[in-house]
Length: 149
Image 1: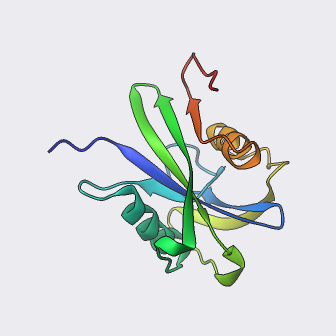
Image 2 (image 1 turned 120 degrees about the vertical axis):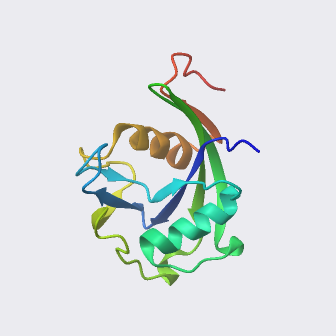
Protein backbone atom coordinates (compact mmCIF):
# COMPACT_ATOMS: atom_id res chain seq x y z
CA UNK A 1 0.00 0.00 0.00
CA UNK A 2 1.28 3.47 -0.85
CA UNK A 3 1.10 6.12 1.87
CA UNK A 4 -0.39 9.37 0.56
CA UNK A 5 1.01 12.23 2.59
CA UNK A 6 -1.36 14.13 4.81
CA UNK A 7 -1.15 16.14 7.98
CA UNK A 8 -3.43 17.21 10.80
CA UNK A 9 -3.71 20.33 12.92
CA UNK A 10 -5.46 20.87 16.23
CA UNK A 11 -7.00 24.31 16.71
CA UNK A 12 -7.62 25.20 20.35
CA UNK A 13 -9.60 28.44 20.52
CA UNK A 14 -10.94 30.14 23.61
CA UNK A 15 -12.04 33.70 24.32
CA UNK A 16 -11.03 34.79 20.81
CA UNK A 17 -7.50 33.39 21.08
CA UNK A 18 -5.86 30.43 19.36
CA UNK A 19 -3.07 28.31 20.79
CA UNK A 20 0.10 28.41 18.69
CA UNK A 21 3.52 26.89 19.24
CA UNK A 22 6.91 28.42 18.43
CA UNK A 23 9.13 26.18 16.31
CA UNK A 24 12.82 25.82 17.17
CA UNK A 25 15.75 23.78 15.83
CA UNK A 26 13.92 22.95 12.62
CA UNK A 27 14.93 23.49 9.01
CA UNK A 28 11.73 25.25 8.00
CA UNK A 29 10.26 28.34 9.71
CA UNK A 30 12.56 28.17 12.73
CA UNK A 31 11.41 30.61 15.43
CA UNK A 32 7.96 31.15 13.93
CA UNK A 33 4.50 30.29 15.22
CA UNK A 34 2.22 27.54 13.93
CA UNK A 35 -0.88 25.55 14.82
CA UNK A 36 0.02 22.33 16.69
CA UNK A 37 -0.08 19.25 14.51
CA UNK A 38 1.94 16.97 12.30
CA UNK A 39 2.04 14.32 9.61
CA UNK A 40 0.07 11.11 9.56
CA UNK A 41 2.17 7.99 9.76
CA UNK A 42 1.78 5.10 7.29
CA UNK A 43 -1.39 3.15 8.13
CA UNK A 44 -2.59 5.85 10.57
CA UNK A 45 -5.93 7.57 10.12
CA UNK A 46 -6.14 11.37 10.39
CA UNK A 47 -8.25 10.94 13.54
CA UNK A 48 -5.61 8.74 15.18
CA UNK A 49 -2.92 11.21 14.07
CA UNK A 50 -4.59 14.25 15.65
CA UNK A 51 -5.12 12.35 18.92
CA UNK A 52 -1.46 11.23 18.90
CA UNK A 53 -0.09 14.66 17.97
CA UNK A 54 -2.17 16.29 20.73
CA UNK A 55 -0.43 14.12 23.28
CA UNK A 56 3.04 14.31 21.72
CA UNK A 57 3.07 18.09 21.31
CA UNK A 58 0.72 19.41 24.01
CA UNK A 59 0.60 16.67 26.63
CA UNK A 60 -3.17 16.33 26.52
CA UNK A 61 -5.11 13.08 26.34
CA UNK A 62 -8.14 13.55 24.12
CA UNK A 63 -10.64 11.29 22.43
CA UNK A 64 -12.82 11.59 19.34
CA UNK A 65 -15.60 13.28 21.35
CA UNK A 66 -13.22 16.11 22.34
CA UNK A 67 -12.72 17.35 18.78
CA UNK A 68 -14.62 18.19 15.63
CA UNK A 69 -13.49 18.27 12.01
CA UNK A 70 -13.58 21.79 10.58
CA UNK A 71 -11.79 21.89 7.23
CA UNK A 72 -9.52 20.37 4.63
CA UNK A 73 -6.61 22.37 3.27
CA UNK A 74 -5.03 21.39 -0.04
CA UNK A 75 -1.37 22.39 0.24
CA UNK A 76 1.21 22.87 -2.48
CA UNK A 77 4.67 23.64 -1.12
CA UNK A 78 7.31 23.53 -3.84
CA UNK A 79 7.36 19.97 -5.16
CA UNK A 80 5.20 18.68 -2.30
CA UNK A 81 1.43 18.40 -2.39
CA UNK A 82 -0.70 17.08 0.45
CA UNK A 83 -3.93 17.54 2.39
CA UNK A 84 -4.00 18.99 5.89
CA UNK A 85 -7.10 18.21 7.92
CA UNK A 86 -8.08 20.80 10.51
CA UNK A 87 -9.71 19.77 13.77
CA UNK A 88 -10.98 21.99 16.57
CA UNK A 89 -10.60 21.09 20.22
CA UNK A 90 -13.93 21.38 22.00
CA UNK A 91 -13.78 22.93 25.48
CA UNK A 92 -10.04 23.76 25.55
CA UNK A 93 -10.53 25.29 29.00
CA UNK A 94 -10.73 21.73 30.38
CA UNK A 95 -7.12 20.97 29.41
CA UNK A 96 -3.72 22.03 30.68
CA UNK A 97 -1.26 22.38 27.82
CA UNK A 98 2.46 21.62 28.15
CA UNK A 99 5.48 21.76 25.86
CA UNK A 100 6.24 18.09 25.35
CA UNK A 101 8.91 18.45 22.67
CA UNK A 102 11.25 21.18 23.94
CA UNK A 103 13.72 20.29 21.18
CA UNK A 104 11.06 21.39 18.63
CA UNK A 105 8.99 23.98 20.52
CA UNK A 106 10.19 26.85 22.72
CA UNK A 107 6.83 28.27 23.84
CA UNK A 108 3.07 28.08 23.62
CA UNK A 109 1.32 31.34 22.73
CA UNK A 110 -2.35 32.29 22.97
CA UNK A 111 -2.80 34.71 20.05
CA UNK A 112 -5.74 36.89 19.05
CA UNK A 113 -7.45 34.98 16.26
CA UNK A 114 -8.26 38.21 14.39
CA UNK A 115 -4.83 39.81 14.88
CA UNK A 116 -2.18 37.10 14.66
CA UNK A 117 1.43 37.89 15.55
CA UNK A 118 3.65 38.93 12.63
CA UNK A 119 5.83 35.86 13.13
CA UNK A 120 2.99 33.40 12.51
CA UNK A 121 3.88 31.26 9.49
CA UNK A 122 1.98 32.73 6.51
CA UNK A 123 0.14 29.56 5.39
CA UNK A 124 -1.09 29.10 8.97
CA UNK A 125 -2.37 32.70 8.95
CA UNK A 126 -4.40 31.80 5.85
CA UNK A 127 -5.71 28.59 7.41
CA UNK A 128 -6.84 30.42 10.56
CA UNK A 129 -8.44 33.31 8.66
CA UNK A 130 -10.25 31.13 6.14
CA UNK A 131 -11.31 28.11 8.20
CA UNK A 132 -11.78 29.39 11.73
CA UNK A 133 -12.71 33.03 11.17
CA UNK A 134 -14.66 32.71 7.89
CA UNK A 135 -15.83 29.11 8.40
CA UNK A 136 -14.75 27.76 5.02
CA UNK A 137 -14.62 23.94 4.99
CA UNK A 138 -12.10 23.77 2.12
CA UNK A 139 -9.22 26.04 1.12
CA UNK A 140 -6.10 25.83 -1.03
CA UNK A 141 -2.65 27.10 -0.08
CA UNK A 142 0.18 27.48 -2.59
CA UNK A 143 -1.90 26.93 -5.72
CA UNK A 144 -2.42 29.60 -8.37
CA UNK A 145 -6.17 28.90 -8.64
CA UNK A 146 -6.89 29.82 -5.01
CA UNK A 147 -10.50 30.93 -5.57
CA UNK A 148 -12.84 28.53 -3.79
CA UNK A 149 -16.61 28.69 -3.38
